[in-house]
Image (cartoon, rainbow, N blue to C red):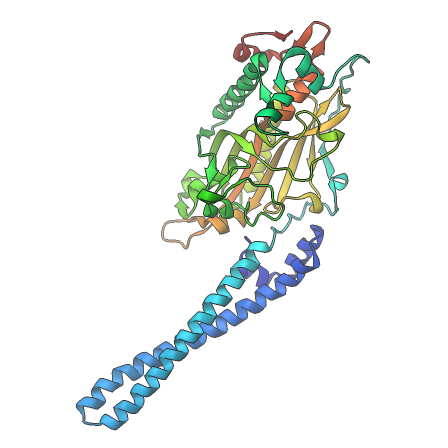
Length: 427
């Protein structure tokens, strides 16, 4: 959530940032609406402070007047106090209503993009931050896409998943299931080597948790909701892990705080149709290892670069061609100030597949979380920066591994995974 003083003091910057995001006119108008509501809030609060002070002063006078025998004057003041109390109660109700509208307005405003975010409206306008300089892999004319390879080698079963749950819920089997488990263990081990503490969080979260990291309000309807219990299935481990620090003041000496967690992730992916989402390209449930960092504001972009290096090392060890994109304003997530996407090349589909997003949210999440630190002992707490990245999302990683490593004999397992899988080839 944007800080109110930033909206007031940097109004033009906020509006320009929203325009880079291609924000709707209603969001642009909401900036001034928020400022106007805050003006009303301040005005009513000033009235309340003055009225309560006057009420307390008059109330203190009443007893003394009665003692002095000035009953009529005391009753007049008592009537004044009664009127003030009624007026205060009315204004307090007005204040609550305005505070509610102000909170709702702030929750609807997205984060302001970092200065390096390019303008643009769709993913076609994203910039290549780091390209793949070597030749891309090529396959024979007989090469199969991963959904056909899955049938041939019994790696995963889409039809069985549809029978059990519905489309977009694959069932991994045999060596496919072991490959899935191997990747999870490999990614977690690499995160541990990089200094990340492993967390096993809940897979369902409450409304406060989802709101704190920006998943609510759910404008795009992507979250699965358990109505009876008022709980949400997590779209990423970022949500419960970051909320560990909700309403917390962390020690500056502990920054950056580095956490990782493996979870299944659940996303409705409404409106996802067409050949480009076949197989594992887009599913409703997938496994992912998330890395989360809480950083000092002066260091958060250096931390983001370290996260990019960590993800790059994973893809290099898996021997997958990849590139890094800097997302344009129109493709930027609601909560992000700057996001880099990692894409691996799918040789059979001859297209790039997104496998990770690494983002710096600056103070947007921490303001909702009330996640703070002190620069020094006794200093006023200030908001920390939060960051997260996929390291990595398994579904499309498996798709690329199956396609790029297919041979006439079977699917060759990358060397780095063989101690985890216990086999060298899927045949």
